[in-house]
View: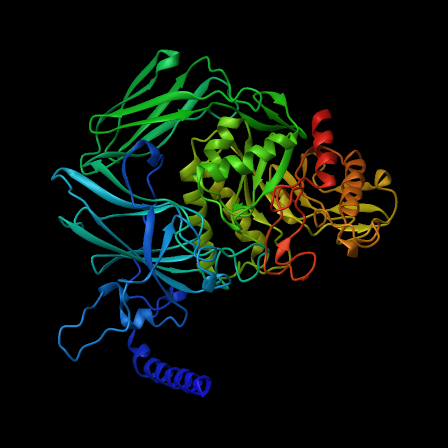
Length: 614
C-alpha cells in the first residue's frame, strides 16, 4: 500500500511539474547552449599568478541543491526567497541542505550523484570589508562545465568550459557584512561543447578547483610574459600589462639572483614592452632551475618563480636549449586514482607526478584538457616537461561557429594561465579528429595560427589516429601535419588491431618525413593480479598480455623514422563509464601501468627499463 501511495505521489508530481513547465518556461529567455538564462555576461579572462596576490579563499564546505529536472531556473533559486505570510511556502532552501567540499567534484562526494550529469546549485556565505581605493574579484580555477554566478541575488556572469580559470569583478557589488555567492553548475554534455557528447573519461561535475577573492589596487598587474625569445638562450622578449583607469605607470623588473633590474613605462593601453639579455642557468629536466622574478608597478607588486629554456625543432629532431632531447613520456588524467575523484590539490599533483618520475619520465602528457595549476607548477619543480592539451576531442562540431569561438576562448585561457611556466613545452590543439569532418582542417589550421600568435615559445601538435596499417606497414598522413611542429600518432597495435607480422619488421611511410614523430598513445588493458584465463589471449585481461604488447611496441619503435618520443596510455587505471565489463573493468579503463590502487603491472617494468637506456 505504501509503495502504491508513493508511486501515485511521484506520478502526480511529475504531471504538475510538466504543466508548470508548459505554462511558465516559454516566458524565459533561452540563450544558445547556456540554457535558460536571464543574461549571459561572459567570464572575464583571469589574471595570472593568483598565488602571488592578496587572496581570501572561499574553499571549504558549500551548501548544495541538486536540480535533476532543471526547475531551479524557474524557481529563481539565486533569489533565496523566504516565506513572508503565514500561507507562503518556498520549495527550495539552502538552509539544512547537503554540504559538499569545494574544490571537488559532486559525483564522488554524494552517492546519489555518482553518475549524475546535470545541474547542482552551490552556495557560499562570506563576509568582506573592502577599502575605498581597492578592487575585488571572484576567481574560479575551473567549474565543469557551464557556470552561472550570482552575488547577493544578482547575476554577475556566466562561463563555459570545464578546465580553465575565469573571474568577475565585484568591486561595486560586494556589500559590508554578509554576502551570498551562488553558482549554478551544469555538467551535461553538449553537442557543441568542448569536449562534445562522447569521451573516454569520467565527467566529473562541480566547482572542481580553487575559488578565491582577489583584492587589488585601482591599477594592478593583470598579465605579463617573461620568457626567452624563440631561438635564443639569453635574450628575453616580453611585456607587462596593467589594468586600471590610470594605466601609464613606471614598472620595474627585478631578478635578484642575477642582480638584474630594468625600468620600463607602460603606454596608454597599460602595456610595457620588455627586452633584455642575461646569463641564465637554463631550466631542463636534469636541472630544473627557477629564478625569483619581481614585477613592481607603482601600485602593485607580483612575485613569480620563472625558469628559462628554449624548445625548438631542428631538422627532424627536437632540441631543448640547443641539445637534442628524447621525450620519455606518460599520459595522465586529472584523477586521484585511489579516491576515484577529480584531482585538484598540490598533494594530488605530487601523487601523480611522483609516479611519472619513478617510471623514468621527463615529460607528462596531461590529457585531454588543461589540468590544474598545481600539476603544472609541481611538474616544473620536479623537472618534468609538460604537454598541455585542449579538449578538442574526436566528434567536435567544427562547422558550428559557436564551437570555433569556444576553441578560441579556451585556447586564450589556457595559454594565458601558463604563459610563464617553462615546463609547458608542447601545446596540443586536438586529439583524434578526422579529415573528413566538415570544416575540421580549416578550423584547426586557423586555431594553430592563433596559438602561434599568442605563444611562440612552445611546440604545437595535433594528435591523429587515422593512419592505415596493412602488410605490416604504417602509412601516416593527415592534412593537419602541415601545420604542426611534431607529428603525433596514437596507435594500439597489439590491442585494437593485431600485429600482421614481426614488430621489428614494421615499415613506416610518414607524410612530411622532415618532421619529428611522437607516439602519443599505445598500450592495452589488463587487470592487476588477474590470473584467470590464457595469458596469450586478450580476453583474459591478463598482465602478461599487456606486457607482451609493450615488449612488441618497443621493438617497433626502432623502426620509426625521426622518433622524438613516446608516451604510453597511461599511468593509472582511471574511471570511464564506457568500460562496462563487470568482471575486469567495472567502469575503469584498465590500460594503466598502475592499478587505481597504485600497484605496478608487469608492463611498468618494461617501460621503466626502456627509459633507463634512452
